[in-house]
Image (cartoon, rainbow, N blue to C red; front, top):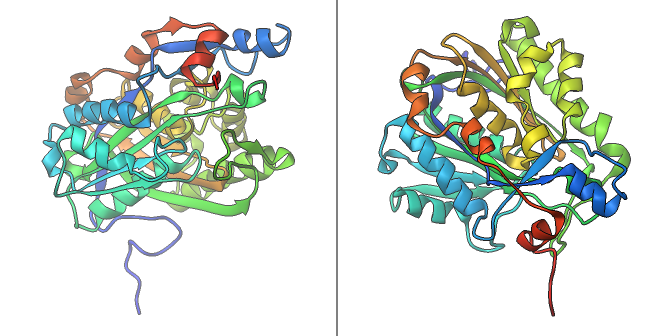
Length: 359
């Protein structure tokens, strides 16, 4: 059996060309400085791995934040929600163990009842998992539009290193025909292994680290491997991209990954948001992409590489189209949400995140 041009090689390429026709971000307004975590747990002797992280309000969760981001994406796409054929929400912190977030989001934005809906999990790359699936659905011709969301309200055990960075926020993307898109997705590639770097069992409140597995065997191996295969198979080098965005659990990891792959700091800085909002887990790399799309010019090429513990990375090669100039101003920018800032102390943060329980 002969393989067609879309099924050869390692890259995933749709039968019809697909792109991002709308995008939107959401970041809660509350901010916890790293110095506050250090004040409580390190005697004030540490500045922490980032400046501060975003914290959800008492009335915010993955569902409410996904709705906000989805509405921004619909505004930029210029389509009605009934034109969507799928609503997929990727997260590590779905509010319900048995009750999909996606059905509530679909109902709230007006996409029901003729819609496919589902919740996705793969640690911090659950968001890009939904994008790969949406790319396949639209690329096969089964649907014209699909909504892919990555959103989290991440938790860190009190006093743990994760508490400095585990944050809230994410992004939504509507994928559709390339001719209507703001950015064409040329291909995707996924690199996956069984690596026990990070996990949370059922009924556990906080996740655990695999210690020696968390750096080189997990993040760096998967990020660099996915990026290298994408560039090798696409015939590109780091110099062919105006922007690159990696999963950003902290400030240092994505910058080191970029250096290993030959990218300059100027290509990384626009999408590097973790220093000011923390690690938004399933939303981490893709909210960086929204910040890039907010300022990118037609013709700019972007490399996106996510990472999720367990472990795996999804890589995407995109080119911005002329349509970006007319449509990105139709919704709030990512910078707008970041600038909408209210600082909280550790006690307020503990109350907002349910870390104080009275029995």
